[in-house]
Image (cartoon, rainbow, N blue to C red; front, side, top):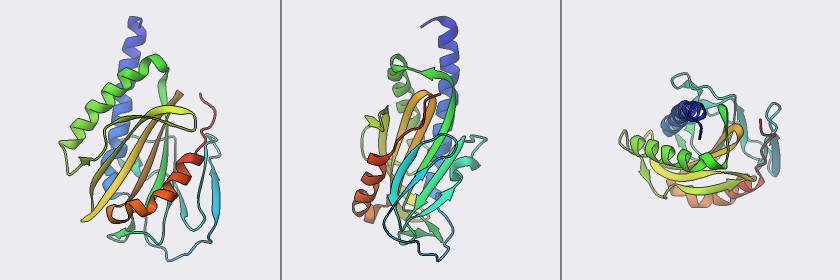
Length: 210
């Protein structure tokens, strides 16, 4: 890799890792205020108006636009959407069971040749995160592909206001775009939520690479 490109790539990785940290750390408190509304059942499709990504989700889940992780250290995603189960687990009057998409525009285009270095840096960051709280990794960082986009996935357990919680994070890269997908549920109902999560992940379609 040429010196200038390597310097730019290294700087981008630093930013990327900060973005990941900004998303992962507050996820132990992700949630939405109780509304009492009960949506209709069935399956619905969400399509982002700007980036064009889409996914199917249970029709009785609620859409919350805007990224709850945006509150951290200036790490603002370009797009954020969550869908949550209003009948799911609650901690401190916030919903726990959810799926979230965050989109980031990177300073360089990440190609296949960069992926091994990205993986090493993500792994290093995850180790640092595990030293900062009650995060317990339940799966190794593994290669993943969602909607034709390559990246990595990892699963953690932690507590949300005293409620044991499990989350799987996907870090996906296409061109100069990074998607982070977060699947989260109370640990005691994590297995029960898998059919819903599988439907969402299998239906996820990215927008055009930039």
